[in-house]
Amino acid sequence: MAKLYIVGTPIGNMKDTTLRGIETLKSVDVVACEDTRHSLPLLSAYDVHARLIAYHKFNEAEASETIIKLIADGKNVALITDAGMPSISDPGAEVIRKCREQGVEVELVPGPTAFASAVTLSGIKAQGFTFLGFLPEKANDKRSLVSKVKDTGLPIVLYCAPHDLAKTAEFLFKELGDRTVHVCRELTKVHECVEDTRLSDFHAEERGEIVLIVDASEAQNPLLALSVEEHLRHYLNLGYDQKTAVKTVASERNLPKNDVYQIAINLK
Picture 1: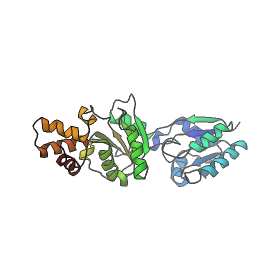
Picture 2: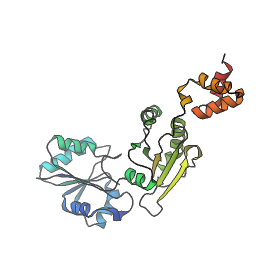
Picture 3: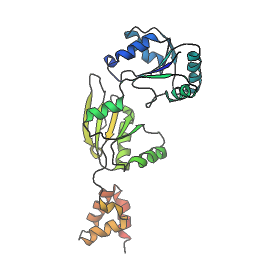
Picture 4: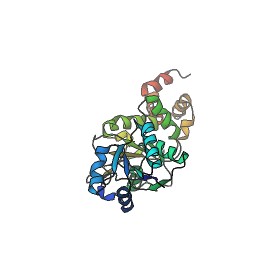
């Protein structure tokens, strides 16, 4: 009986293609690609001559039905993305789900994944972490997603396009406060590197494919459980002048100093 094969592809270095992956791609009748033009060099390098069809986020529903029909007609189909594993911040989940629902056999042929590779390379303790993929484009959706994971006590891993790096770092600093961030670029490629810095001292270079790993929040400041008014009174009672108290509270709560100052002048 024909199958759907989920095949991992390299995230940078073409030599990271597995032997089993090559054997599978050479054996199937059809390869469903996220972008046939992007996949052609890899497939040509390993002498894969299967028929290529496009499967991407703009045609998932239609292409899923095509793939299921091909398998029903006895054709083995391999599903690949431009890099890494299908359905991980890439198309693939819909056809995999539909195949399983209809009793089509699905076989996994795993390969590298950028987020797991970045976590390993960063050197963080990885008993657990939260993977967000690419952040949503809409500000409210982005803020809602990050707010759900900011206080889990786990590192946050996400993908970022080079042209979005500066605004993503700024957004994360506003939402998470100042944390250590590991900037992993060009994984498995010639210029692979990891930069360890702080969100407050982030210098965005718009180059390379990027995985960001933001460390878990550091020890929680117990004063953050107070209201801003109570937080200010704490420092004023310790003998801080108003200006120093405002500056300290604004820094600890990651708030604009002017906002804290307006609260301070209305304290009774």
